[in-house]
Image 1 (cartoon, rainbow, N blue to C red):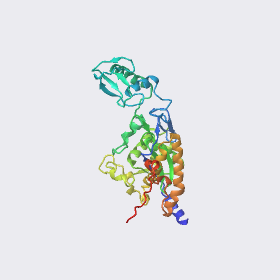
Image 2 (image 1 turned 60 degrees about the horizontal axis):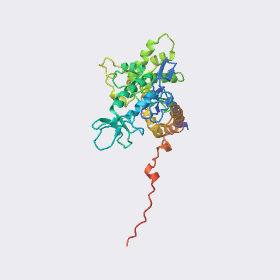
Image 3 (image 1 turned 90 degrees about the vertical axis):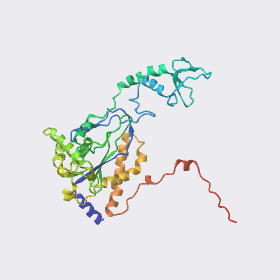
Image 4 (image 1 turned 135 degrees about the horizontal axis):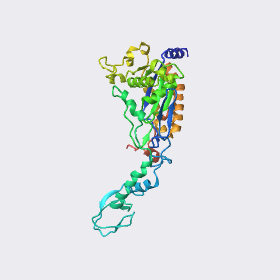
Length: 371
C-alpha cells in the first residue's frame, strides 16, 4: 500500500492530461444533422451532435425525421415490396402478358421495364419509374441536408502538418468514437462521445471542463500543434469578453506530442520551417521524462472489449455506460497497474461460441476398437 501511495504521489506531481479518441467504438443515430447542440460554456464553444435518436429499422432517420409519404412511395420504385432491388429487363415474346403494377398498362414485346429478379412478380414500366423519381428529391427538401458543420470545417485551417483526422462520411451517421482524457497516473478523468468526427472544438470544450476542476500544465495529444493553434486563436478572438478558462488554456498549458506520433510531424518539429512550434517536442520538457504517453492507447485497447455490447445502444445509454466502464477502469485496473500486478480483463473479452456451435451440437464419435 505504501509503495502504491508513493507511486501515485509521484505521478500527481506531473500535471498532465492525455487526449485520444477510440474511433471504432460508436453507435448509430438519426441522419438529421441539426437539433442537439452541446454547449461548453466555460470556453464559449459548442458542437452540434444532430438528432441523437435511434434510427427506425431499415432507415437512416428516426421517427420524427422520417421521410414524408410521397418519398416513401417513390422509394418503392427502387425495390419491390419485399425490398429486393429492381433490375432492368426487356419484354420477351414468350406468350406471357406483362403489366405495370403501378399504372396497370400493358407492356408490349421489346419494351424495357423494371422487375424484381427474385421472383416476386413485381413489374414497373419505364414511364412510371422515370416520372416518379423527381418526387424523391422534392420530398426530401424539407429535411436538413447532410453536410459537414461549419465549426468542423473552419478548424482545418490550423492543421499545419496535414495530419487532421478525415471528415466523417455523409448520409447514415454514427458517433465519431469515444474521446477520453487520462491523467499521468492512468486515471480516466473525462470521457465523452465524439460529435461526428474528432475535432479540436470539442476537445477544447472538454478541456475547459477539466481545467475548471484541476490544474493542468501539459496536454498530450497526437496532433498537439493543431490543437495549440486552435486554442490560442480562439482565446485571442474572445479576449476581453469573459471565458477566463479559455485564456488559461491558451497561456498556462503546454501542448505536447506523444512519443509514438511525433515521428509523423514535419512542420512543427522542423526548426527551419515557418510554422515551427518548439513546445510540442516532449524532449524539451524534463518534467515529462518519466511520463507514459501510451496510456490512452492502453485504455482504448481495454475499452475495445466492450465494443460488441456498446455498438447497439441508444446514444444516451451509451454515454452512461461509458461512465460506468471508466469507473471500473479507475477502481480495478489503475491500482493493479500502480502495484505492478496483472491487469484484470473483463469477461467480455472471452471468446464467444459461434452461432453454428450454438445450433449444432456435435455428437462424440465412439472410439474405434483396434483389432
